Image 1 (cartoon, rainbow, N blue to C red):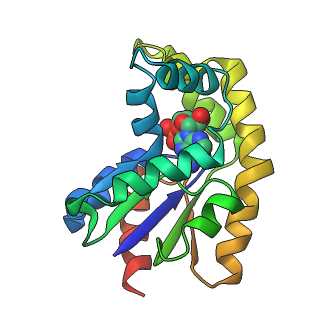
Image 2 (cartoon, rainbow, N blue to C red):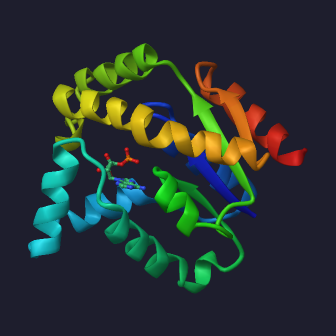
Length: 182
Ligand code: AMP
């Protein structure tokens, strides 16, 4: 099963993706995580990715698609995956033609996402370099501009499932499991 999770930053994609992965024994993959790892490398690509991410911008489609393509060639993903954070633009979705069976949109309002991120960053956890208020605002803007059309893309193809992402973690998990059985 190839499942894609889409949602604004703070919607709970990685929490739900990991829960789902554990429950269904399907590997979880996050482009955000891949890029954060690449950003640690002291190479020109690493420095470039770090700069783009920390400013809250999307990595260009060409690079993103290249990296995702490379990862999905690995044998562990042959039987399916839970993909978090990709595709985020219509160009990426076009590239990902056979990449998704089901697309789950974790819907939370901008206000709720902001509240969660502020809490996450104010709760004693180390503030992630890409979660400064300016970067978060930029990312919310990018979500509306580039990723909302991706939701439309999958809605038209009747592949989109909308889940209320403002319920409790457990309720959301159950809602996702139910939606996958349909
Ligand atoms: P995330 O952890 O999913 O919020 O991703 C963190 C950051 O990684 C994003 O703000 C982007 O800079 C980059 N990123 C992750 N996925 C993508 C993608 N599909 N396309 C472009 N940039 C991405």
